[in-house]
Length: 111
Image (cartoon, rainbow, N blue to C red):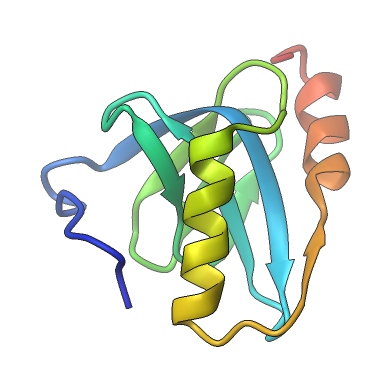
C-alpha cells in the first residue's frame, strides 16, 4: 500500500538514493530506504528482488532500479517514511542490514 502516489516505473525506471539504508521487515522482505534524488523526498522501495554488486543497484518487485549513491547513512525524511510504511503495512519488527550492502558497494569502489 503506497503512502502517496509515486511516479510509475515507466516514467521513473531508475531512482538514485543517497543517505541510504537497507532494512529487512518481519516478513523477511528487504527494502531500500533513503533520500530519492529524483523526487527530493524520503523513499521506501518495494521488496528487493535482486542486487548487482558490481553496479551497486537493485531491482525491486515493482521493476524499478534503485542505485545506491555515496555512503549509506540516516536521513530524517527517509526514516519517517520507513516508520510510516511499517505502520501502514503492519510490520512488527525490522532489522537494519545495510552493512551487508555497504561492504559490497564499498568493495566495488562506489563509496
